[in-house]
Image 1 (cartoon, helix red, strand yellow):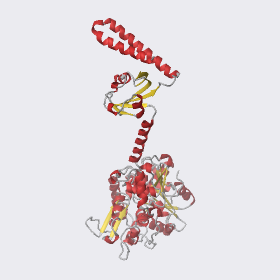
Image 2 (cartoon, one colour; image 1 turned 180 degrees about the horizontal axis):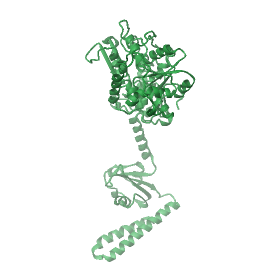
Image 3 (cartoon, one colour; image 1 turned 180 degrees about the vertical axis):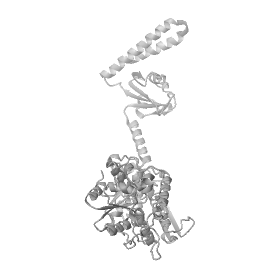
Image 4 (cartoon, helix red, strand yellow; image 1 turned 90 degrees about the horizontal axis):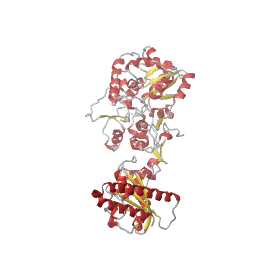
Length: 562
C-alpha cells in the first residue's frame, strides 16, 4: 500500500498496467514506475476521478472511519450532512437518517444546506470580489495549482462544509466536534487546510458511512422518522449539489443564453473553460463543479443509480422539506477565505526541445508520421507523453506501439539468429518465411517463397496435421545429404504451420532421437504392411497407386538408415 499521506492513494496489489487512471486524470497527477501507478500528492487536486474510473479498484480515498469512531466515543459530535444524501439513500430512509446517525453515536444531525445558503448570500452580495464560485474544493485546488492567473477571479468565500462547521460549533459550543458526511474526496483535503481546521474535525464519504452502518447492523425498519436539526428555510439550498444549484440558491439566472452567468460540470468542461484567456473572461458569475452532473456524482458516492434518477431525488427532497424549518440561519460566522500561491514544480518544470526530440527518437517516433497519438498510454499526444517521461511521470513501456515494435523486433531477431532452420507455412503449406539457417541447411533462397513445402522437402508431417490425425509431428529424415530432425506444429489463431529443423549430420544420436527413429520406423512399417494387405485385396484397382505408395514408404525407411 502507498505510504504517502495523499487523500487518494494506490492499492498496489490491485494495480495492473492498464493506465486508465492516467487517461482519466484531468491533471495527469499519476506517476507510473515499474508498472505501478501512484498518485503524486503535490499534483493531485483530489477530484477522485481515478477512484471512480479504476476498473481494478486500485485507487482509493483515504479512510477516516476509525478516527471518527474514536471521536464519537469520546466527544459530543455533530453531523453536517451533505444535501446529496437524498440521491444516495432510498426515499423511505430520508427522514430516518437523523435517528440512524444518532444510533451510531452522533449527538446532533444537521444539513450542510445551511452552510450552502450562507455562502451563497456572501458570494453574490454586491460587494463580492471575483466571479468564480468556490464551493467545489477540486476546482479551487485546480486553479491554485494549474491556473494561477485565475486566482484573483475566485470569490474569496469558504465552501458550505466549512461555513456550516463554524455555524454548528457556534451553536453547540466550541467543545463540540463536527463531522462532515458527503460524496466528495476533495472535502477530506479541504478540511486539512490550515485555515479550515477550526471548522471541521473529520470527513466521511457516503461509502464509509454505509460501511459503518453495515458493521453496526443499523436497521432502518426500527427507526422512527424525525426532522433534521437544521435552521432556516432551505428549499433552494437543498438543490446545491446539482449543476447550477448555487445559482439557483441565489435566485440567479440559469439560462444558458445569458452571457453574464455560466454553470458547468465535469472535468472536460472545467478544463476547457480555463483554457480561455483571462482577459477574455466575460462572465459576472461562473459556477464550476468538477464532477459531471455535480456533487451527486462524487467519487465517494458508491451507488450505481442512474445520474438522472439521482437528480430527480434531490429535487423531490427539496420539495418535500422546503418549508419545514422556520428558525433562520446564523449569519455572524466568518465566511471569508484566501487562496494559496504555491504551485507544483513538477508541473511547471521546463523540458527542452532537445530532450523531447531525444525521447521521441528513442521510442521510434522521430518523425511526425510515426507519432500515432493513439492515447493508449494515457496522454493525448506522443509529445505530451515524452514530456511526462522527461519529468519522470511516465515510462516508454506505457506506449503500446513501441512495445509491440520491440516484441516484433525481438521475435525477428530470434528467428534470424537461430542455429536451427525455421520455416513458416500458410494453411495450404505454401512457404511464407524461411530463416537463414533453413536456407543454408537446404541450399535454397527466397525464390521458393509462395511455393509448397513439398517442392523442397517431404510434407508428410504437415499433411498429417491437415488431416487432423496429429496436432504436432516429429520425425527424423534425410534430404540433400543432410540428416535432420523435424518438429512441426500448427498455430490455430494464425492458421499457419511452423517447422523447426535440427541438423543431425555431424552429431551423435541421443536416446531420445533414437526413440524417435524407432517409433517412426515402426509407424512406417505398420503403414506399409496395412497398405500391402489392401493392395493384395484389390490388386487390379489399386495397382498403380499401391506401387507408388510402396516406393515412397520404402524410400523413407532407407532414408532413415542411410
